[in-house]
Image (cartoon, rainbow, N blue to C red; front, top):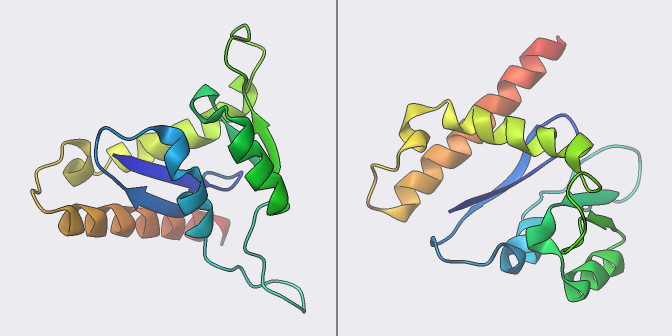
Length: 138
């Protein structure tokens, strides 16, 4: 299963590939650690985003606290809360990135038996998505 973290413009920042029967919340911290440093202003390179939007699958207080320790403001939908009160206005960002990844035929259906080859295609697709977004800005 592929786990993806993006910025607010649906640009993929990091992607992880795991087995199919994993709980989503167990991959939150490895996914945050997989974000590469971003150069910007003079000083230390940024490694963590300002905020994190996640759906009900990531609703655990332990992971909220660990995100806060990293300086990230967690905005995660609560389990048991009524639908429509959560992250519907922000969820389209990650859904659009997932749709872009499924636009690549090799990722829509997993044909590769080896995980390293599938992960290579997944990361190549993320690079192509980022390239297309940069090309659209110029």
